[in-house]
Image (tube, rainbow, N blue to C red; front, side, top):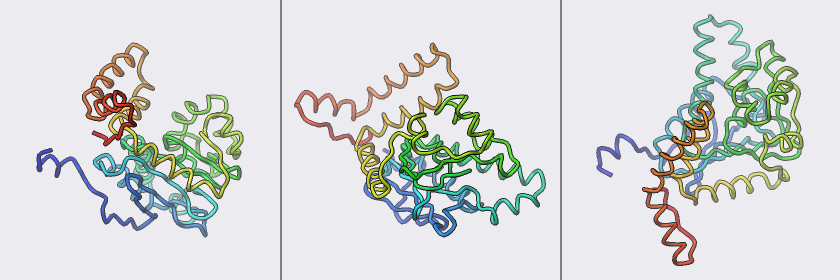
Length: 279
């Protein structure tokens, strides 16, 4: 790639050190840790914004191909911090409130639009905005003690928060989503797996290792093609079948131009495992 295109369209996360959550990078896997365990890892105005900016930046990062998002300690995320967010919201004007709700929605947009597959590793409490982060991820792991609650109605708000009324019914069905959004009750890990919210349930002591193994397997795959699959899964929600077939024809033809496609053929012909490089 030409140097000016490299500068304009590619970024590196080397030396990246966020202020409001943990970040580590192991090979092609990035690891986000919500790290306020004494409060069950709640989000604040600052962590919302910093997470949004990270996922926006990831759209231009080639060196990271998969993301794991987890909570420190025995919980995933308890949602928006009651003292740092809920209290101040009661004193805001309408324009400021709308700016806040749009900002939280922008976090979900950025997470859904980044090309990396995002795996949520859920243990313990997963509530409110924490449940939204898990919902917006591409894949979800849980432990048997995970409890996921979209509890917005318990603070006098509608269940239509950060895309919940759009995303949740597509994951678990309209009736089950309605139950969770109207009651605010916790969904158990067993229910979540049976309903299709969680892909796997593993022992608490195996959660981090299993999430990293899954992310590393994905990162070793055809990165460009994985990103295309993620894009199509998102875009085809609003397409007719005919539109989806044409979109997929175009997407697959583009993937057939990649070097990874050629590598896969050459490896198959040589009876070897392909070594994908994401280009």
